[in-house]
Figure (cartoon, rainbow, N blue to C red):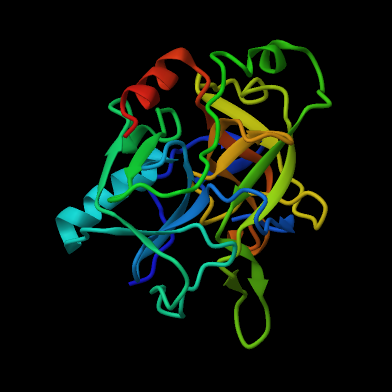
Length: 280
C-alpha cells in the first residue's frame, strides 16, 4: 500500500513537459544538522512528505499532503502522522518507523483555497500540528513580498535558494526496470530563480515561484517525497516558499531529473496571514 503522494494532475504543458506534483532531493548534498527544523512526515506504510517547523508545535508543508491525509483518514482510518527531525530517518522497507526519534501529530489543516482538481493553479499550503511542543529552533518566516524584487526583475539573479528535503534520491538499476531509491536522508539542493513564471507557456498563478533544477552532486533537484519541503533564502533560515512539484524528465519519469522546480511562495501577505493566524 506504499504510495508516493499523487493529487490529481493538472493537464498543463510547460517547457514542453507535463506537470507533476512533487511526491526528494536528487543529487545535492547530505544536510546533516544544517537544517534541524526540517522533518520527514510519514503516514506509516503509505506515503510521506517533508515539512518545516515554524513554531514549537507547527509544521508548514504542502496542501496536497494535508488534503491527501484527510482522504486517508476518511478512507483508511489514518489518525496520526509520524514526524522525525533526524538527519537520516529510521524507516524500514515497509515504510514504518524502525528506531530513531519520532513525534506524533494527529491534527492538520489545509489552506481554505486549496483545490485538488485545480492543482497546481491553487493555494498549495498545509499545516501539521505536533501533539506536544519540541525543543528545536524553528525556521523564520519571510517579510511580506520578499520575493517581489527578484520576480519582477529582468534576467538572472545571483541570489541562491536552498531546498531541503527527504525522499527519492535517484534510482536503483539492474535486475529489472529502474526503481526509485529512497534513503530517508535529509539533503540540501542549491537552486536559482528561473525567470519567466509561465511566460513561455502563457500560464501563470500568483503563488508560483520557479527554480531551476540541476540534478548533480553540487546542486541537486527536487523530486518525489519533497512535497512541502522548504525553499530557503540561500544561506539563511528564512523560508520563502514550499516545494510542490516539478517537470519530469528521464525514463518513465523515474529519474526525477526536472528542468524546473515548482514552488508556492509564502511571502504573499494573504498567505502569511493565514499561516501566522493558525500557528500553535
